[in-house]
Image (cartoon, rainbow, N blue to C red; front, side, top):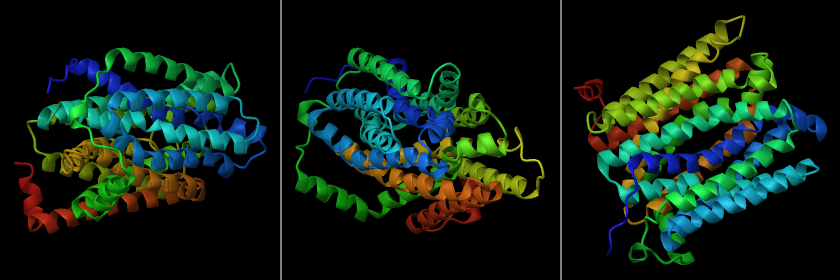
Length: 411
């Protein structure tokens, strides 16, 4: 077996980070245009909100197959085809003349959007193990985290001189550039001798086995609930920014930049800590920050008479920091459970998580976004649920999770 040519870590982090960006970029870029789209199509805010939920639904459904297909035919073909089809769906969105058509093409966008993030994780584990994988995963997370901060700023800037359709033409251009970058800089990391045949029966059997794997499902549930506490606010951003904070379409950066800065710092610290501090210590840090942030957020929402920036956003910065610290630790543990099926494991994790986040965006956000206290209370419930589930799982597998054991994680 010939060795895989290794690109530099910086180049690989850049390419994989850019790939991971293009999925969330198409979510957040559209946020400033919600009000404009609603007026043009005579649609309610809840109806326009479905442009997010159908996107996540498509993302989650196809996530089951991105990894498995890449396990069978290689990483590069799946990534390149996904980018190309995403660009074509973006053209369809730009040419849509009614909301149902827009929703249909948003669903198709979602079907293609997961290739960068899902297959990119498998690329990392194809090339690296242990501390090196953790460092690279953290670097990719840092680049990935830039997307939600930049996207609404770009969307608002585009709306300043063009109509909402121009946002999708921008995504088309982004896809063209990304396709060229991947074609030239990303090698194939899954050679033919390692590939698994794509067969419906074994694939279904593998997924059913993952659903029955207690540790895998526990890790998925913890990471999903933990991220949902933050995603509830991300999916509610149009209401939070324009109604609660009384800002304009061009001001989404005041919400997203601080929140994403928290994620960047968390990812940076995680990368620096690789090889110095164990996963348990980092998980304790991340969950502690998340719990403190959720409590702070609820207290502010309940007791303030002037819900305003920066105090309304400050707790979310700490929450995003905690999420960024926790997620890489859990993700690597999930992938290590299936060393020969990392693509499929990444797909199943993405599917389960995105189905839950689609429910958050399509159901919880429209119900709660008008009430800051309601948002904060549910976010706290999600964060506490993730923490309690993690503690329970650690106790079940490690023979207890007492305060003394938590303290030992810091020694």
